[in-house]
Each structure stands twice: as C-alpha cells, then as structure tokens.
Image (cartoon, rainbow, N blue to C red; front, top):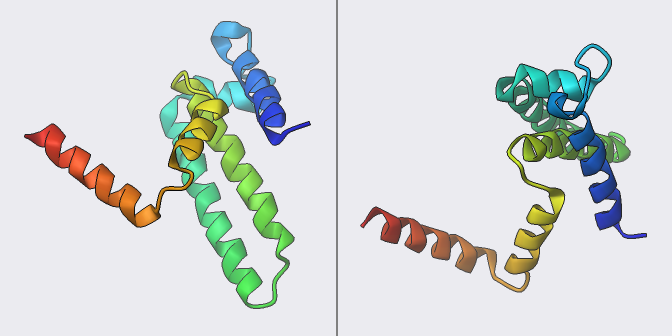
Length: 121
C-alpha cells in the first residue's frame, strides 16, 4: 500500500466531512473547521507549522525526534483540509513534487521569478 493511497483515503474522509456532503460541525472537527471557513483552518496550519519548528528545535537539543513526525502529521492533516476547501487533492501536491523532481531548487526558484516577471510585463 502506498502513502498515496493513505493520503487519498484521508482526503476522501475530509471531503465527506464538508457540510455540503453531510458533515456535521457539531460532531466532526473537520466539518467544524470547514464550516468556520478559511480563517479557522489557516490559523491551525500556522500553529502546526510553528509546532513543527519547535519540535525540531527541541530535537536539536536532545528532545524526542518522534515529536517532529507527530507535528508534521498535524501540519499535513490541516493542510489537507485547506486543499479540500479549495477543491484540490493530495495528488495535486504529489504531481507538483514529481514535476520538480530532478530540478535544482535554485533553478526552480529562478524559473518562478522569471515567470513572475513575464506575468507582470
């Protein structure tokens, strides 16, 4: 079983929690976040990203490295809620990562800057 399958299953559960699909904000954390709108889940993404940083900093000073995994899982989960809200899926992110595969990060950044310049012109 691939991690893509796990992400797809989780994405389907998140999708099912949308109020439009019968999700109940009184009974489902995901439905509640989606019902509250972007500010709610975007705030959670910011909090979780900070917790990833804190867990990594703690690990640098002898803390438990597995806390990084726990916090990244929370970050990914809340990011998946955002993807669902905007009609996107984990497969879209995987496709973008695959597109970037073999491309230097420096080259990728330069390409994005050039594309942004072209768009402004």
